[in-house]
Image (cartoon, rainbow, N blue to C red; front, side, top):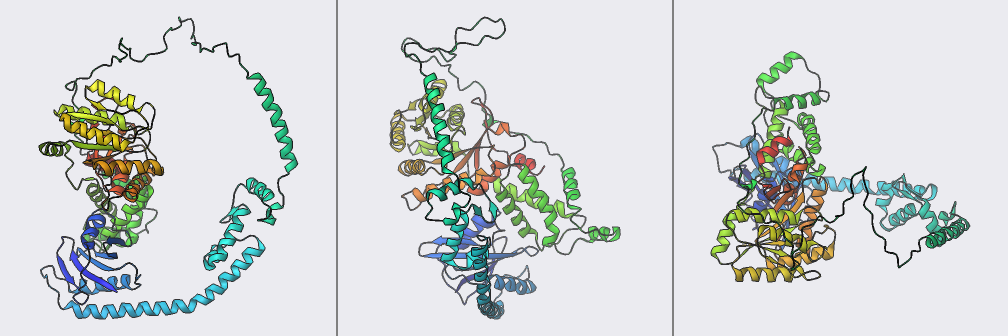
Length: 619
């Protein structure tokens, strides 16, 4: 049963709701749809699922872009109503005829909606009956395909597999054992060997099987070579092998190979101290970008889209540019959107994200009237630019200094946890953030919670000595959640304003390490969870962010799990104009980019310039 159908403007004014339905929705599905889908440029999706305590809803919507109207239908997810899409299209058509911008009440639309609903339900019933009548004929054909494929050539028909539930699995297993998958040949030498060893499973795999006698001969030969190697590799234990320095040309040999920092009599390293007033962090420097016109890029897009479009006479083209196109259709947008998608992908935007963005832009432009003297490409580019700015602009305050002072007034430290995959630069950028905080007279403590990787504690200790800030460490093979908790307690006693927690790098599929990270976040409840990611990453950005958030949600014991709050983008100075990783990460997680690492020194940390990123993406 349909739970609710409502019509509202893009400004948020509700024009009409179905009083007959009148069901009180649990939770706030409409608000969540607007906040998480429509404002995040995900309106190209087919539907949106909303989970509330005691209910699970599916929401579907459509737009009238020329009038600026949104039509939303809500129903229980378990029902799978077939008539909703048809009903939304009918309501959109009828309501647009009576819509008046000066009018806010449409009580007379109730009777029209009842008729439209009955019409949509009747169509759905007819469609269901016609489908049931056609289904047996299809099943007979599919079964015949399975038999023919299974007994003739091992089977390549996917329709047969879909028709017979259990039998399809047998056929699929038969295909894989014979070295075929979906009709494509794969390496079949190893499956044939398996067929010889496990001959009971598949007798057909014994044909052209591997000769075991040849394998035995090879192993015998291998033993001989192994014994020769073992004899030659015996070394005298008394002789100590030392590495000799290579001498280039006639240069005198260097006697020193260890260029690390010297150690004093107490065993402490004499590490250079970096004063906090030596050099201003790039976080406090405003970046200025030039406002060059992008007419040249529009011309390139127009040239790319010319072969796709139909050739028109000069008079019709001139008349259309003066009068404007009545309504933009999807076919008009396809060439420009295809060129934009290719451009985004060349800038390292994940393909899935580029596809969704283009679908969302198409949904926002379809049906709109094209203004006079305006090209489709420039209209599409302007819509895409507006969408990118909306996505990359933070929806909440990311002023960490203000949050630090607010926590200081409550007499508790502000805790930041750095998480991410291996080798992205968590420890180095943690030190950059510490340097920036020191410049603003904020006392900082580091917590060495990477108890997994060798050398991680020593690396953080080196940064702490250079910056002259305290570090809390417990060595290796300790529970990082307990180490972080004790570090926060120590910071509370010492009066430190901020605790920067370094964690071990972990791949998103490593469940034991992800479970340990979830425990650390749940036990210590940090104020900010920063995901540290490389600007070099492409399609993997989607996988990393989505799985990190998914694992943190699944493995948490809290009913309201903490997810990623912000992103720190590293190695930004190595990518030239391939800035798409920033867009992919923000789009998939909804978290803002709070810091950008752009070098190797402590001052090389800056804010994300949204205008600069958007300009580079569309250039």
